[in-house]
Image (cartoon, rainbow, N blue to C red):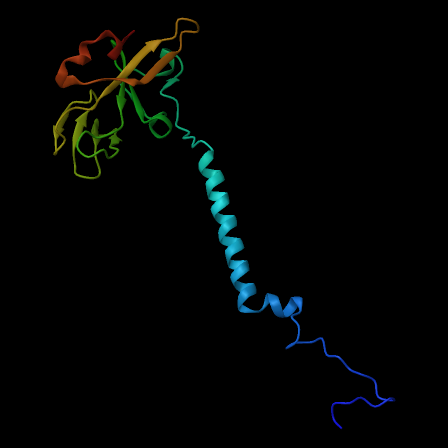
Length: 182
């Protein structure tokens, strides 16, 4: 009489699997792993959707900057203090001052000022430029560009505006804004 309980024997009902599913067994089952994967993928999709709704902001350096006073620059010298931050060389002559772009007109490399040789020399392909910006050696097809340079009427500081460029081959170096008279 295997299936009939006897009076003194307690009836034992098993609630452990295979008859039921516990939380722990559900989490480690394939269904639990599938739900966890789905939840993470859904969360990542929602996060990327929300990020798409926010604007992308590109922080660029300003196109114009103040470079100090004219008396701070030595005559006949190329000043390199703005080369790294603003990509500009300021050249002081006996007549005034001009601002040169630090971008080579060949492939966009950054030339170096060689003080002993009095020239800009591009390390990439060997283009050479005089202190005036005129090319004289190498593959550079044209001279360096100049930026607009003026004095601030309020405080008398030099203002370089990189949004306005002047090219020598177009005759733009004769423009009064391409050269600051001293």
